[in-house]
Amino acid sequence: MTEIKKDTGGFVRISDEVIMVIAGTAAMEAEGVLRHAWLVGGKPARKQMAKCTKVVVKNKTVAIGISIAVRFGAKIHEVSVDVQKKVKSAIETMTGLTVAEVNVTVNTIIGEKKEKTKA
Image (tube, rainbow, N blue to C red; front, side):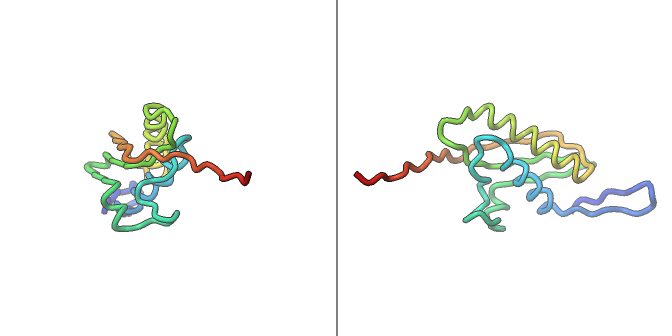
């Protein structure tokens, strides 16, 4: 749980799980990403989320690791850089925290299914 003290006299608490969801949602917006590794059947799987996303917050600075599945034929380097930019932007915009690093692991490449045609 990350606590951010505000100048107004109060504070805001943000759970690591919320940061994970922001990161996963942002990663899905990158071209070539077929799924975030912790999505099972299109829905978040909490046990998988903890294994595939790691969040470390220290002094209002976030370091995050995220695992993704990429479409076969996509340029992995370009997809990874796009994921890093989108995740960094989303977390900083939504939480006000500073993102120091976004480490992307491509753990799966998925080929597109070919449609069967009747002869």
